[in-house]
Length: 327
Image (cartoon, rainbow, N blue to C red; front, side):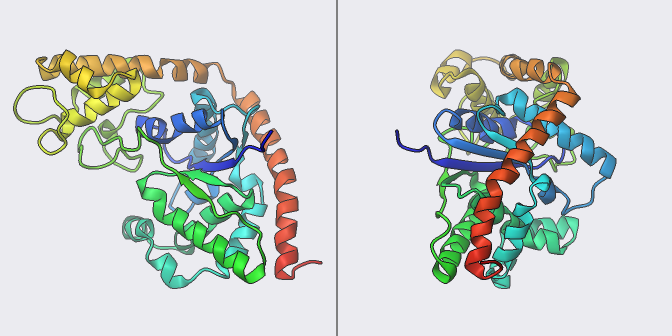
């Protein structure tokens, strides 16, 4: 039997996970477990590049792990751990940083955007190099990416090629996995912008752990469009189009069928139907989360980190030998 290809991806533990994260990424993580050797981690080192409260951060870190398990990331099928508990990540990031150009990092769109709002620091500037190390450490063959991560994956691919050319063939050049559906879930308050954890308006996003009454209230307040009719048209009806896509992703019903069913409905009735679809879709996640206790999750993550360190060290030892740090 051919060896399965390896996939790597990570999630920051900043703020709660919303349906954009779930539909755009996490649901695909779960599906990938059927066909790939998956390595998933909570990228907590990436998350400390902006100001944060340590007590809140510790809670959010564990909460993110619990949500991912509730979504279907299975620690018995995938390697799952906290990034900071595997020091080979940062060691490889330093090594890769020595072959990364300052100009290349300065052109990163996310650095430009975040440095304007959060203030620039070295961690934020070098963020893409640590991301490259995350991926290359385990010799990942592929990475699931959204539109906002393509630039970072290109840097990872460049660094793999550059390292291999200088020190010998060590890293596979990872390919992107771009999901067919769910790559774009927009803000409920601004359907021209992606749903985001960083949006100060909590009504702009639905959290996967939101109770049903909160989901109903957020969908009810969602920005819609002038005129009547429920149809998928991003040019003239972005608000309705966003809700249609969200409903389709949760129910599995094609958008044309939803248009036929709800086309003559008023906005109020349609929003109620959307809210019910979201509530039903998130119910298993809420139930799974409620069934988890902190102690068992801590044990799972500690076990995952031990396995990750054991897997990473032989790989990193080869890198040290290639660059002359050991024989």
